[in-house]
Image 1 (cartoon, rainbow, N blue to C red):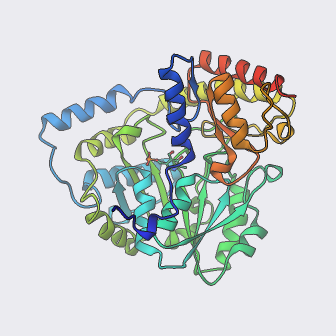
Image 2: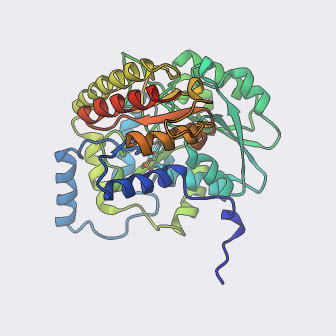
Length: 400
Ligand code: PLP
């Protein structure tokens, strides 16, 4: 009989995937389902990036590359960090992987021993805790409620740090809340880290370019350069350049860490895709004006969804600074009953009700560690979002 390894015994397929599966079933039955569960831009990969990939294929760049990225790709990442973030890194400080996710995976595999702790501001992207557990680490979840803008407070960090803490994992702008830290807030967090030299910082900047209302994106090492020799910056082209399927992300950090991560990568995937690297160089070096246009388009959709949700009695939605998610409280609807008499006891119940009755797929806060909330991804067509908001409003009005 089949037996799973202990290391994945309490890791299951994510709630998001379960909801998508059910949404697809309903769609197959002919129901007009709107899926607002996915975490990817609805734009296409820019043409100039696609062209670079075609060229790479024609030029025979279809073989293994150096373990953690081609020299050209690493140089392109260095240029991006210098130009975009004011940070000086050398190619030996760069690791290129199959998506930002593999950068995270390599880093935790390469650094965590059994029982080592990683502090994660909560709500958080579900993957974080699962990767850490697979690597034998212990996620230390610090609740960051809506009253604090879903942001980690410096005192909370100080309290969460123990002798076993290896990393603080920050994600700004955040999946699932869209909350982003400004320079002052990052400086306060950095100050706590400066008091605890054994704690390293992982900064997941994947939503860097999806920001609104003149918000100024900064990465923590920019704010506090003294953290540079114990920080890993994670970024990629998946969200910025609508390249989720190309699987290309990168990390920048101290050379010892980068070398350790290469050991993991060498025995996992050998190298990132040669073609995707060629395309990503063009993405990083090429025209970037479309990033602002796309962010403006997301902002319009954000405003539509936030206003529509806040119009619902029992729902409260904070206006996010970035990413393409809203994270709303449904506390005011808990305890109410559906038209067929089922009591909404949890955010999962609420999301199930919305999917079954309004045919809109959304994800409960429990999947991200904070309830009773729900996440909507507004990386969908405006017309779909308008329709989805109307349906959610009606379904909520039907609750008694
Ligand atoms: N980091 C965060 C916070 C994300 O939300 C995601 C994707 O959902 C990723 C990383 C993964 O990026 P990639 O597709 O480059 O692996």
